[in-house]
Image 1 (cartoon, rainbow, N blue to C red):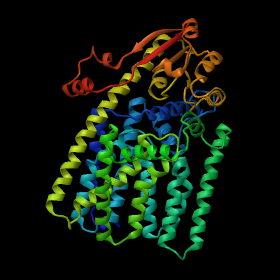
Image 2 (image 1 turned 60 degrees about the vertical axis):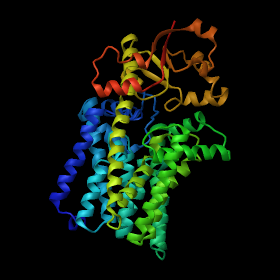
Image 3 (image 1 turned 90 degrees about the vertical axis):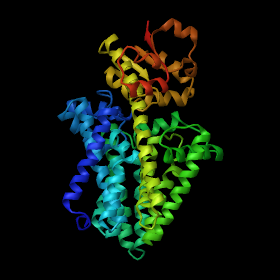
Image 4 (image 1 turned 60 degrees about the horizontal axis):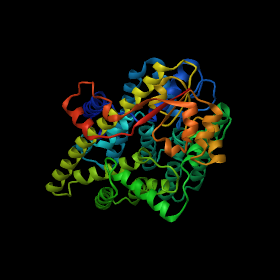
Length: 496
């Protein structure tokens, strides 16, 4: 047990510090992932009206995780907007803490090493991000972490239960279900009956996921998956796959988006440090199963996502988490000279500060988007309709019936994309649905006829990021971030 290495007092004190750092980060830097507001919109309808939909009565949901949505809906039922996100922050921080605690128990026997591991992970940027973003990623990380712990401790019943749950955490958690089953097979080569039970458990979990979709939405898989496969369709060429894998690797090792050259340099050195960390870990533990699992979760996920048409940085967060726990082991391992330890701690703290600035920069952009939703709400009737992308902040604060330009909650958009193409469908959809408002970043990219546009819609307002906070008193940090940051302009068109 972990308490044999650290006593309850040690664990409690580090836990309090761990949670406090994340709550303060959320309060002062306020970063919430755009997609978290999609969850909040659905959770609001589910908790207040019993309707599992983004738009009331639509029977279409954009929630990726059925299980995580229940947590969001529960907190939304108990609290208002801000209280919901603070509650989610605490919940995700708890998932993060126990994930870190599990890996610390797997890595270390000495009390001082485990304490150091927990303290350093308290300030690791990716761990703070996973707590703050309001998404299901912390739950996913906890699930595959405890899954590996079950394998090492031979807790088979827990592993079977986990296989039933994983598809409900996220549909693409099939990767971790397969990986955990394969890891179990490597570790216990002669237990074929148990391997079969695990496979059957995963199939049952997938059937539960499909049954929920059929019950609520009359589809086998989420509309979000269908919509993205059409909206972000790319040719499956070798060059295309290599570009997506390169992008995913950058998302794994770099703390933020960078130019290609900078991201290539960061990725190159990140890979070298990661390989050195894995080598160091193998020399210390002599456990090839452990190395296989960490390597697969760190690099396997970015590679597999490279086969998909749509990949976003937050998809790769679980891989980044696994990379960092390996590097922190490298810092702490007693075989290393003091210089490596001090250098590693310096890099971690530097990244921590950079990440906090990055989080605040992103949160300022999201406040800017939220202001667009509030503007639309103040200028339209309650029965007005909106056509736009992205789906998170703006519709949540606008509180109007929404058509999603990607198709995440609008199957008709997917049908129009298939029929007219990913550019020409915009005008056909606008003609057909006649939304009262549409929000666009660039009308040229939508392929709209200027004559048709002038006849049917007028530009109500252009939102310019550089003008967003001119009339507000910003502190020195926010002022520096705002003046050096950037975001796209939004054009708000109203129907004539």
